[in-house]
Image (cartoon, rainbow, N blue to C red):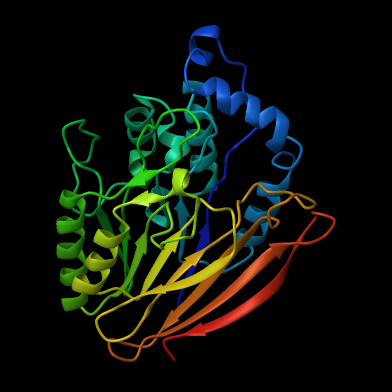
Length: 302
């Protein structure tokens, strides 16, 4: 039995002080949005409460599907680096970037360099190289292959779209096929939901059809995403049966907001190729925000 936890959209706070130079960009819109809409519900000990609950599980791996920061300032990236080091060793945590991690030009590269130990694939260079394409990457843990993709890119103000391109699609298909031939359970991580209509147009993933074809051609058993701050279950066409596509609420969303409270998915993976079994248990912050409870149970591939 392999136990995999999934959290997303940490948006680690509080928001640090920013210089006028840092605010003279798209960050000004995010700065205003944070103070108007997010600060009251995305602060406090919510993330710590989730992580304490996860720490009490006999976990094999933790998957984090992006949006680690808010405005991608250098100080935020440094703070997340320290948080990751406290959360666990790189071999036990896999991270992909979200649109907030690439909020302005240059942020994507800074974040990837800083968090590279948690994004480094099996065959990747030991030290980050700016000329090396980090994504997709594959990490094998037990009988599970974790494949991290990126849709993160800098966008204009009031846009939060993502992009899944041809190169990444070709390489992802190759990784999926190799993992399938090795008899591994394949988990694909991506930030934007690869489902039409799951987000407003300005927040959509460009390349949804390409990603769907990638999953169908390469094969997969599970897709994890974030971005919407919602608890959702969709599916994509697989090679033999539908592939579950599962989203989760923001890991920093306190109770009482317009979006669901913070939570995490716990996946129990068992079986063997052709007979995989997958149990999803969704844990959610309780009404007073001081603990979590089991909110939903779903069985897949049984």
